[in-house]
Length: 307
Image (cartoon, rainbow, N blue to C red; front, side, top):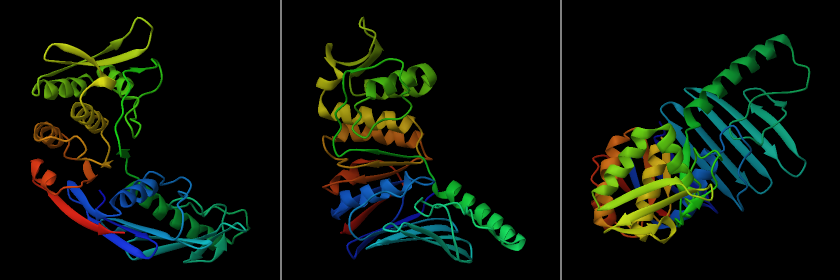
């Protein structure tokens, strides 16, 4: 699992050793989370398009990856143990090159942790080197290509969602939350029941099902009154979105504006859910460090960034 992350924007750097729950405070904290999500969710795919000069570094055990974009050059460095592979991508030309440990043109250096592929003729000994490098890069992609979800900076679930569409991923504003809850109820009933049980501790009853119009609907019953999900209290919507995201079993859940609408009661319920998901790390942006005290988890930290 990922241990360390570092973000650079315009010459300013911020870093964090990740605990089970890492609270991010300071200035530029939302930008810190955006770069974190943009790169980690793109492992094996095209480099994210971020403006200006930027960089990112991540480490998991003895595997590390860094990318830096300066003017018209993007440089990526992958390390596994003492071995190092370096790529360069020059967008204007475009040019794609492997520059270390051997130098050659490759098909695509604009991918997060690329694969060494080339149309050039290479000697048999070089083919063996390329095969070894690709095995190393595949290991780095497996180690760092964690399942990453992001929520925020606001949560605005709809009350209705189209039935039949794949719903095993929550969009970052939780607009498809009814569909995700329906997916959990059908495919992971214990996870859905866990969410309902936790909400009942707050006096909230969750109801999800097909409407007479053929769509998926979600509503909450609070003090006996039925409230469409989109009209529910902000604290309930936020808790429900985070709870659903956790039940999708991401390795890393990033939440921007985490303390918006958070209460001590919802924080207590969320603490119980987090203890049920010890393999998910949470990285969240907060405005008040007091919120960090509300979450009852053992391994947590507060990190200040200045970007």
